[in-house]
Length: 304
Image 1 (tube, rainbow, N blue to C red):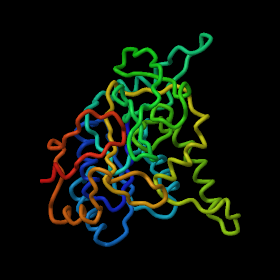
Image 2 (image 1 turned 180 degrees about the vertical axis):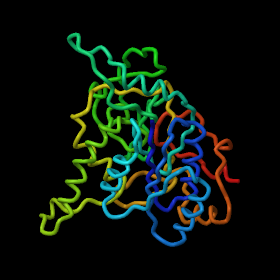
Image 3 (image 1 turned 30 degrees about the horizontal axis):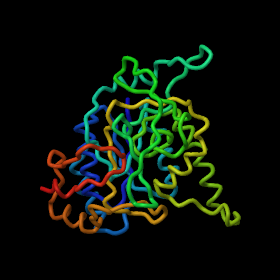
């Protein structure tokens, strides 16, 4: 019923933590796919080990267009709902009720002038605890724009209108690769258009202003915003967030995302530890009170 696609590059140790945390705390994902990329044979060895450790997970090597790769996963998944995340995300709290998520998508909500509306997204990174956002300018967090929550209903969810607050904060950003669940048909339509555009921009002779798109998850999220106004205006999430992104390192140069400000661990060092047999025990990590979906965790605190 639920597919999770995890983007990964050169981070076997962190991916192992992501997969174990999802299996522990979000067990309704009955179809998990890893779309991975590597920069050297040593990193590939880490993924070969992971494939044996997680035989229930499908591993696909990224080839050619990442947009086509994801579109093919969507077409083949056979589930009603589809979610994406990255390999530095951790499912740190439990939310086991797939029934509640299904009901949130299927139950029309009262809307303007007597009409009803269905949700566009069920976010696993949002919750009432999320009150801050990252500020690249000061490499810290700042208060986020909070929505006026709609009726909680009877589905153990909270609802809000993402159009009621400025675009760009965590509550006004419905198209994300960081733990947002979509109806598979909805996200499939988004990627169907992106595959066509990606192919067009990669053609020879296209003006420089329309040059080829970099093939990274960051660019996927950026290009997804083309479809933002095709979405319904209401989203839902659990009362408390389930996913946190711990940016301890960075594996791409397209977006200069803040990383390693508190706990900086290079992917090379982490891969060496993984190849030597080290793993991260989720139960030994301390998350404190998560107020921002991007919060660095001392992941080596759980090293065993």
